Image (cartoon, rainbow, N blue to C red; front, side, top):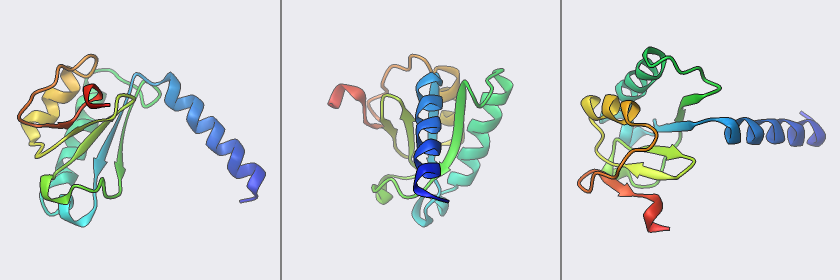
Length: 116
């Protein structure tokens, strides 16, 4: 890919992200994966689909390490950047059901937009 093509792709992705209601980033690095983050990814994906969301409205995607391996599985919600720790399958469904807005749950929200 040429630099101009890469720049155009980046700009398209940035525009798409701005138009989305929410993006869920599920850590699939080794530490989180050993704590069943793949199942969290599947649960969030199913909940988004079952909730009638298209990927253009709400994207669920795997990402690399979010840097807090001892707190996994980790899920980061964009655009507000909230990071949820020790996420269980039940909580994954709760996250999606209350996606916008989701009040912080002090025992499992590691970082929220209120911290910025």
